[in-house]
Image (cartoon, rainbow, N blue to C red; front, side):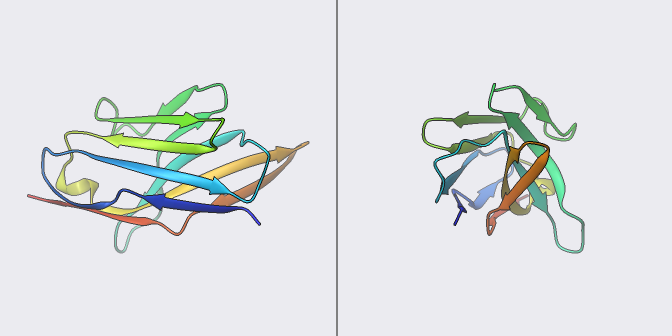
Length: 119
């Protein structure tokens, strides 16, 4: 059974940095796409950044230039380096991984890690 486990969340002051990690276990397959989403209280879950196995990355406009996504395909891990954090970045951050079997997507989510940015 595939499991995604996030780590690295916490409390940081505005302008600070955090690095999130997501470790995938329970599979020998690599994922086509891995990424990070976030959900603030009372709001929907939104895309933060995604990265393909070919390390092509995409970012939400709100984090461009501040966040960097990377992955280690050999370890089935994905990371999110978050710099210049703002209070509006406060949310639960979720790791997502997608593996395609033909045209059928298998989608996996982690349990989330809390990031709180104080002003």
